[in-house]
Image 1: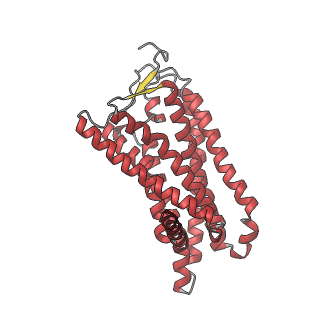
Image 2: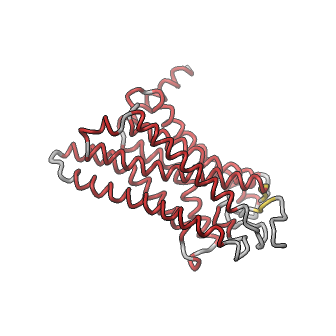
Image 3: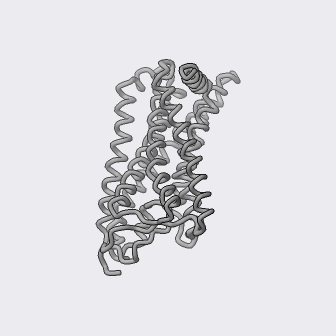
Length: 311
């Protein structure tokens, strides 16, 4: 392969070689995808339609569900189609679009999770000032900033990644176009062009992580001082779903992008990628709905309304 990008498509990692296993992969991903669409769709519709849920916490949750819908729709349908049609190819432009979309949605989700940590901090540690600090205009600006930061980050990384000459072929060892796998195909000297941008991004990611940790240290300090058991239960119900989602997202994403080369293997990379790109968007609605009585009631009312209209 010459020291330039002289091909028009990438070859993605296939889950299986036999037709039966390919169809099994298609069926499993289809089930997970439909579950993600249903769960996130129900949460989005319930929050939008129920005026009792028009609060900052549920406004941010609505945005999170939209990001989860987008991220899983970026990777899973193409992988399902490849298994169904027994192919591994994705066009060069399609790969670039997939990298941009997935990076945009995941970066925006991480920024939004940071904003949600601040929302919970204000709600529990500054309850008397909550209405002022988290009014509707502030919430809209915070959500817009999260989406904008994701867009800018994705634009920079995608442009930089696909401007690097690729010397190691066009086979990516992943079921979707992932930045680390694309960079493995680059020339060794050209890889340094991405290093500076990666350092800046990691610094911002670490700053957000520190902010989330510090916020929750203060939150739990306040919660443990609450005398009533009901008050502590309500506070934990607000925080634990968000903390679970952050833990799953950060742990799998960090391992995927920052693991030492000695820990890297196609099988391990595949499992980690499935966890943060497929499983996480699918289970997030379940995590939130299990701990929120208001959300469960709103979803139940929505389902009942749909069933009544169909009769």
